Length: 123
Image (cartoon, rainbow, N blue to C red; front, side, top):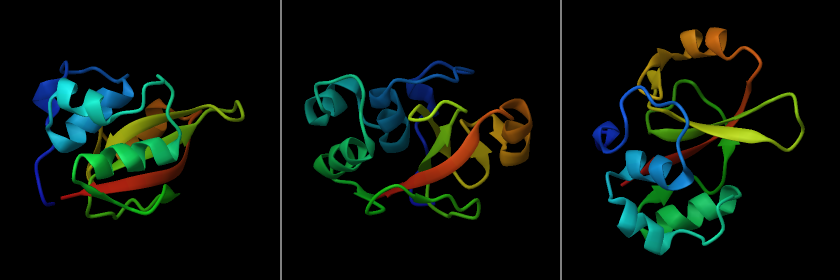
């Protein structure tokens, strides 16, 4: 892994993050710095994440791609509920989801969620 995830920038044990906090964990940048590069609206689509990371000088996969549990790059893991069109983002570093659960533990805990894709992020 190219860099260490900045988990200290958010509350320990927290599982629900804003989009800016997710970007902060993956990049280690401050909320203020990310806010300048982020879209103004509170809901982001996949390309909004790509554009934000790019403006901040990070590389990403071209778009959200098929999830690979063996990824060597930190990523935003996208999971959907049974409701069409609703998804939530989690951070996966190739070992742990949100620095708390192995992938297997997460899948047991959130069995109603289906992992659909990921956006890899690296320096």
